[in-house]
Length: 263
Image (cartoon, rainbow, N blue to C red; front, side, top):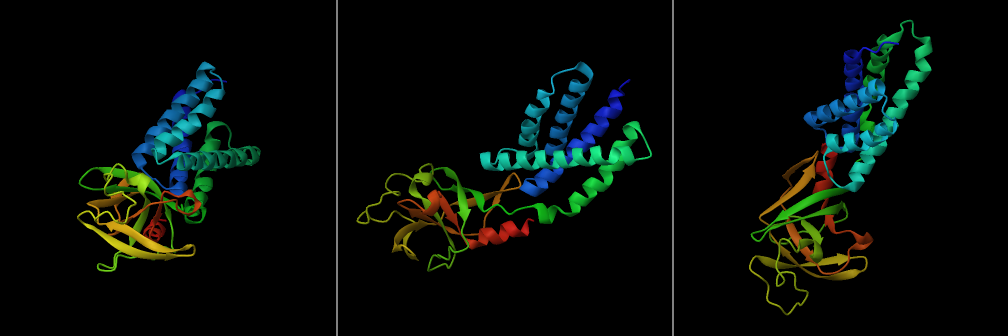
C-alpha cells in the first residue's frame, strides 16, 4: 500500500494534539504552543516508524517525552500523572478506532477524521469531570536574600492567621526555606531575638500547640498551568520540626479556592 506521508502527518498531528490538549486540561498546565510542539514531535516520530521501518519501541519513548514537552516540568508526580492520562486516552481512542472501523461506510484515511470528531468533542466537554484537583501546589517564596521553592499541601484546615493583618499563614518547614533565610532567621532557639520583620504567632493543633516565627515575604508565587503567578497575600511561618505526612509546607485554604477556580 502506498502511504501518503503528508496526509499521514496531518492526521497524526491532529490526533496527537487532541490527546495532549486533553491531557493538559485534565492534569493542569494547558499551553497551546507547548502542545503544538509536542504533537509535531510525536507526528514525525510516527512517520519515521511507518515510512522508515523503525522499531515501534520508539513510540513508547516518544509518549513520556511528548507529555514532558506539552506540560513542562512541574514535578515528577505531575509528569507521571500526565503520562498515565495520555496513555489512557490513547488506548481509548485506539479502542474506538478498532471497534468502529469495520462499521464505517468509508475506507482508508477518511475514517480517522470521522472517528476523531465525536470522540474528542465528547471528551472535551467532559474535561471538568475528568480533571481531578491536585491537593498539592508548587510555591515560591522570595525574600531580600533569595528564593525558596517547594511543594505545599493544600490544607483547608489551616486557619492560622497573622493576628495584626488577619492574613493567612503559609506554614513551611525550616529546611525548605534555607535558600531564602539565613541561619539566625531559621534558629529554633526561642531566646534568640526576633530578626527584623518577624513576629511570633501562636498556633493550636491536634497534637498540641506552640509558637512559630512568621515573616512577610517580598513575594509569594504559585505554579499554575505551567506559569508562576502571584499568590494571595500571606505570611510565611517557619516551622522547626516535621509536618504531618512528611509535607514540606501547608498552604492555607485560599490556595484551594484559587485552584478550584481554574477548573
